[in-house]
Amino acid sequence: MSLTIGAHVDQTDPLAEAAARGTTLVQFFLGDPQGYKGPEIRYAGGADGLRADAEAAGVDLYVHAPYVINVATTNNRIRIPSRKLLQQHVDAAASVGAKGLIVHGGHVSKGDDPDVGFDNWRKAVEATDLKVPLLLENTAGGDNAMARYLDRIARVWDAIGSASQAEQVGFCLDTCHAHAGGNPLETVVDDVLAITGRIDLVHCNDSRDAFDSGADRHANFGTGQIDADLLAGVVRSAGAPVVCETPGGPEDHKADFAWLRERL
Ligand SMILES: [Zn+2]
Image (tube, protein in one colour):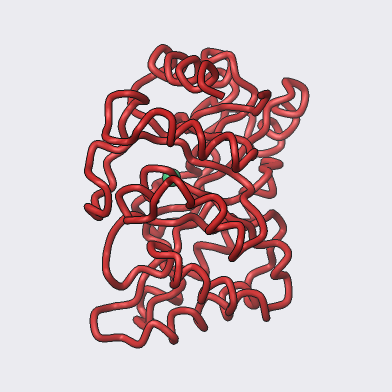
């Protein structure tokens, strides 16, 4: 099976990182993944240079949005800057020619009505100019998460579906998050497809932690707690491009790519 398999890499020179791994697909952050400061292009040639060089090299770029973005929350002091940061990252991702911007589902606070969170997602999609596809990613932990358990993902998807630009919202399935979040990998692809109708990208990661533990610690393939056949089965049935967000550098990633290819 020929799927493109790439990795999450350092943002300074994503094309050199792609070459070092022998891949044509990389994901990276633009700026600080933990801060509200806004995107930053660290590539020497700037955004235009990165776009042109990636095109010339035939490398697909994906941008991962900062972890601090939480468009679902009822807390204005987080939701408002989150929306601003989301638009800034969509714009920056478009400027480098990225195929998509990956954003976590976010969460509401303890005691909040999750319905407000679903509707906040709709409003965020309405309010953002989606110049590149926004790929909503499932997350591993928390009881108040919007995209941990399938029933919540269905509610978010329902809410987003009524927004204009809904067709610009896709789904990124993370295998570590699904496993640690308590969604059986035997059925997760079918379960997600029944809700979203699409899986645009797979984050393929093994998990250091047990099923439904709620922990988010990625592991290299074969070193974690996910069954090898199940992991490969998700990638095979999703049929989407793959990003390995596993630990280590080029050699570790090449070993992960080979491990996965052998099983596809
Ligand atoms: Zn991920």
